[in-house]
Each structure stands twice: as structure tokens, then as C-alpha cells.
Image 1 (tube, rainbow, N blue to C red):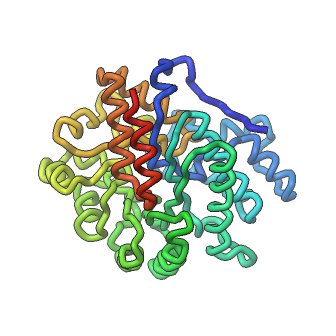
Image 2: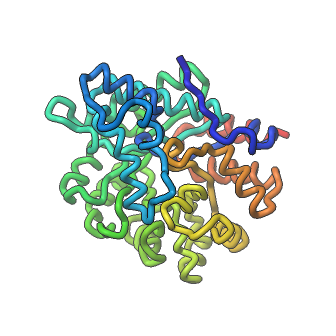
Image 3: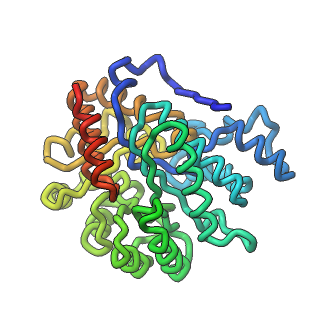
Length: 346
């Protein structure tokens, strides 16, 4: 049974809901349905720390979060039930199905495979299970899915080097990119430079979470030293005009997730978001939903939000989808052309 919750569906104009969309920034761990967490816990004999009726609230922002680290605690609630291949395949399928219901036509789902590794479930099996779930969703809904392997900042550098090698081994089988995620304030990116060298040499696209809890210098480092062509969030680039200029000149795309940026305190409010400035300065931008269950949003809601707050017309929102597709790591040029035609159709 498909459990589709569109969240604030009433706030989304029909034209935006119907818009063919690209989502390049969404995390598997923040996309798990609360009912699925309960069912997986029951099936696996895991006792959740809360009664079933309180699970959904535990997975969602409460309004009391004061930092990115607080926000990530909400995301971590699902981790105990995602320790076997069957569960991972299911949640990947469901995450992509839910994106398809939001009329996302191209999805790059990301996850941190190291979170889910056990003695009986090596990293290669984690990646394979997630890819299988995405393939299931493609067959059932027609969405096009790819997978970005996310290294975790708090993991030892050698663990992420090994993860990069594993990701490269799945290039051509659904893995298209390599990312660095986690607590940016506590774990600087330079610790994982070798892992990104492996990923780049193996032909993977590079995106890095930067400028969310860190400053503009973190964005510059990700671009100049790690080889990022996309930046997850990157909102603090606004603090340095030279960094904004660098992004525009190199056509580095910012994966902006407006609601999440407020929840993690990357920005103080949606009205204070630098998105309009990035657009006027020629910085490529795409809109994601980050952790849709955690933040109770979808790409449609995000587009409606920025359209309303910043006066962006439908054609600008459509252009952002084209911009996202152009920045995607999709390796299938025929599929890219077909998606582009769909997104540019009147």
C-alpha cells in the first residue's frame, strides 16, 4: 500500500503541483515513512523508545532545534530499523515513490551507507539494496532515479576512502555521485580529501554539504580542493562576495532546501534567505526538500514557498527544474534529453 502524505498540499497551486520536477537533494534517512518505521521495528523485533503514536512526532522537527546537530538527531531516529537489505530496499522504493507522487521526474537520492553497515551487511550490500529499491520505484512509477553515496564527516578518513572505492565500483549501475554530509561545524572537510580524490578519479560527480553550519570558506574549500561542481545548501556563501562570484563563474550549482535551511538555522527566516541574491548574481540553483519527513515538506511545497515569498513566477520555477537537470549527474544523455523536453514543454 502506498502511503502518500503531501503535507501542506492546500498551499500548493495546481500549476506548481503539476510541474515536472528535478530533486537533486533529498536524504533517504529523512524520507522514511513513520508507519514503515513502526512496521519494520515490529518485523525485526526491535523495541522503539516511544509508543507507536509518538513515532511520527519524534521524526519531525519540533521547533526546539537550535542547530544543524539538533536537526540531525531527528533524522537519526530511523537508523535502528535500517540494518538489513530488505528494509533498505523497501525504504528506498517508498522514498522514490513519494517523490514520484510529487511529480518529481528525476531524483538523485542520497544516503550514508556506513550508517547501515553491520557484520552481516557490508557496505556493498547496503548500496545494492538501495539501488534495488530505486529500480523497483522506477518500474512502478516511471520516475528516473540515481544514487549519491554520502560519506559522513564524523567517520574516520580511511572509512570514507573505502566508501569512495565502493561507490566507484557501482558507477554505471546507478551510483552517480559522492557527497560529504553530517555535522559541518564539528568535522571539517579537509579530513576527507583523499576520499574525494578517489571518487573524482573514478568518474563520480562531486557534491559537498558546505556553507550550512560552516562559512563561505567551507564552500570555497569544497569547490577548489574537493572538486565539487554542486554544493549542498551553501547559503553562507552569501557572506563573501568573492565566493558568490566563484560559484557564478564556475557554474557551481547550489542545492537549496529553503525550509530545512530555516530548521537548521542556516538562515534566520525564509525572508532572510539569500536565494534571490544568488539568482540575480548568476549562481545556478536547484531546489530540494533535504529531509522531507523531518521537515514536513516536498519540492512542490518548497517551490510554492519561494514563489510566494520572493515573487518568482511559474516560468522561473520551471527554469529552476531545467537548471537542476543540467546540473544533475545523470549519465544517460538520451534520458536527459527526454526529461529536458518534458520540462520545457508548455
